[in-house]
Length: 261
Ligand SMILES: Nc1ncnc2c1ncn2[C@@H]1O[C@H](COP(=O)(O)OP(=O)(O)OP(=O)(O)O)[C@@H](O)[C@H]1O
Image (cartoon, rainbow, N blue to C red; front, side):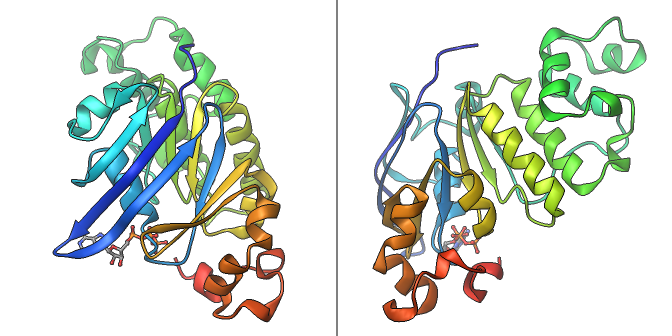
């Protein structure tokens, strides 16, 4: 496993026709962190991740370790060890779990060779299967997996590519309670060897598994710290409820503004 690296974002700005979706964000994620990015709809969370992964043009600086990512192509950024998932899992439904992982791993083999006959499972693929808990379903078509299992497969596909920074967009959306728990534990395991950033609207999930939290609002970082620090911040309470005197909103059920994602 390669060395852990952190993320250092400075004065990140993304505009869409003059609208500032990300408006001067400074963000530090230490190596091996499990950072949650929260904030109301439209706060700029996905756009920030799009900027880090090269999907939108941005100004400022994004260092992963000591490599500047801004200005690089999507492919070059991916080759730098950065991978992301989207809200909808993108797996090959007709192929088995193993074949999906094999394709992600690439390993210099032609697609047909991989599909025709397997001779043993590459070490990285075997490890990813174990890590994401899909070893027993290795030969099942991905299309037959439960919603949560597809998300885990997608995370496995990043692991076999030896991604060192994982950016996950609402990984537990639509999951059952047990699947959420299993996903949280998976993220804890993964972040022992990698840096993980999770965009999330599920406040219970965030409270259970975040090691640190950044709250975005209107394209800026509103608050940052531990779960307790962020929950106690009146600015955060104001954004989530519209007024500061409403008590500890993040301590109870997620407010409507947060659930609408
Ligand atoms: N391609 C685009 N063109 C124009 N505006 C965009 C584009 N992408 C995002 N926006 C706008 O930028 C703002 C930030 O959007 P973004 O999706 O980053 O927010 P978010 O925090 O991820 O929200 P959500 O929690 O709803 O996913 C929103 O006002 C959105 O409408």
